[in-house]
Amino acid sequence: MVNTGIIRKIDGLGRIVIPKDIREQLHLKENDYLEFLVFQEGFTLKKYSKIGRLQGLAQELTDTLNHFLDAEVLIADRDKILAYSGKERAKYINQDTSIKLAKAIRRRESLFEPYRKELEIINGEVIECSYINETIISDSEEAGIITLYRTDKSVSEEDLKIVGIVADFLTKYLEQ
Image (spheres, helix red, strand yellow):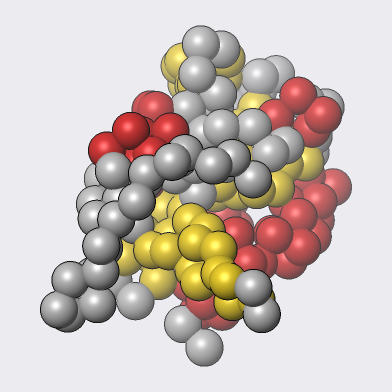
């Protein structure tokens, strides 16, 4: 743990201000959730990801889609690629989500691109492919995104339906 030397006072409503440089370093944005982890000697604040708690399930879903559809599949939140199945797994798993993909989540984009277009999964790396993006919503908030893409052929209407079903499943699972 890094000691920053910054001290903050708790106000009358129990609030503290997280300094801007720390918010930037941790990629904290307005309306992000923080999780309190309490220990005997104190507590830790951690950025909370609703879909991040489902990382194991997300990986099983991407593995299944990859196996049956023979396509690259990922599930991400605005910060990290949580699950990835396909040839590039080692390259993308647990990497920072690209700014473009994070914006797609915030805008609640559902995209069906059957013709080759540019897709940026991690910052600075563009893939020419056909793809599907489907945002995962939980309690009226954007929780993440599922992306299925192909570099060798076009994504299909059937792929779109299946990705939609998985996104709906994750939405319902998160709301339980």
